[in-house]
Amino acid sequence: MSLGSQTPSHLKEIVLKHLTETRQTLLLDDLLACNRFNMTGCLDAIRTPALVICGTDDKLTPIHFSEILSSQIPGAALQTIEGAGHMLILEQPNRLAKLISIFLAAIPYLPGR
Image (cartoon, rainbow, N blue to C red):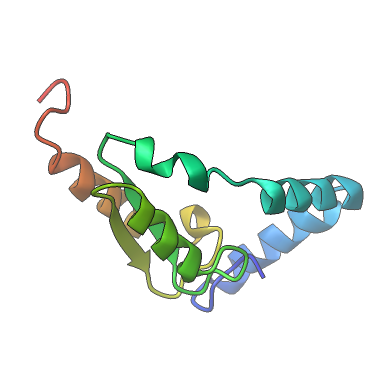
């Protein structure tokens, strides 16, 4: 459920190995904590540029939630990575880095520029 449809099989094997080596109670506690986490009441207070990135195949945090998140942060941008799941940083690191680089380059007051 963590990986998208375009994830190479060798990466799927690595992730599965690590997940099966994780204590089930730890994994359950992590999932429950994520399920209870809710900061939606504070999102309109964000006043810095924000980029929300979601994999189109994310089953743990479906794109619908990223759409809500980006709509509640004033001026936020939403980008998706086609075929990536919840672990898009592992699945599509180059595409993710490119999206972040483009976003950062567009911020006019970024220190050091």
